[in-house]
Length: 114
Length: 114
Image (cartoon, rainbow over all chains, first blue to last red; front, side):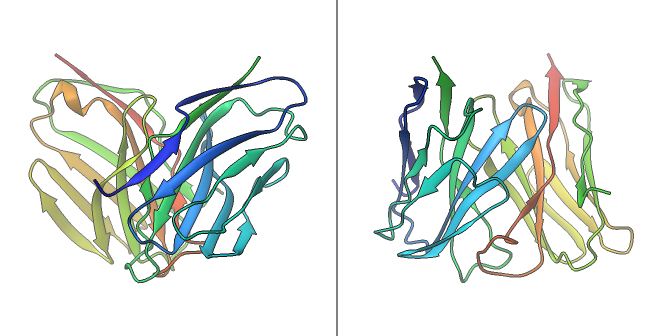
């Protein structure tokens, strides 16, 4: 099955802890994205990457970090500096050659604070 | 003024009704227009994609773009309870990825009453 796999589905973070959300895609897409979704806020871009070993900050990057060591993988770390991490996190990918930058999404990870 | 405006709803209609969902936008450079459907606690899935102005039909769904009015619509005919979800509009200026890849509306929550 081609698609985007996010894990885990649910994640709990303790005070002062860093946690990492996994995102893997087998669509051979070059670009990958992380969004945060809060009720009534819509989708907000955290980080994006257009090629391996390169990534850029989105609108709300503070308190988050990413890496892109492989084309298929784009993990997101929620650091202890992110004071309000409770949200639904979505990973997406797109082909650089697709018209209009159509993005395909994973099923999401719901992060809560203990 | 926000770049993409979308009424959050909820919009509640009886089963079998025609549903009209809409977005307005301010950036006249947008050329590519998409509608995503998001079920509760799931990732968004691409429903419709159109380039420039005009209509596009796919089964019970019709997407309409009026660039002169900066207004896009999604019509759902013969609505079913399974259509109950949040519908997000999205649009982009150009092809390829990047931070300006997609601009999302905040989504309209649709409820189809059996």
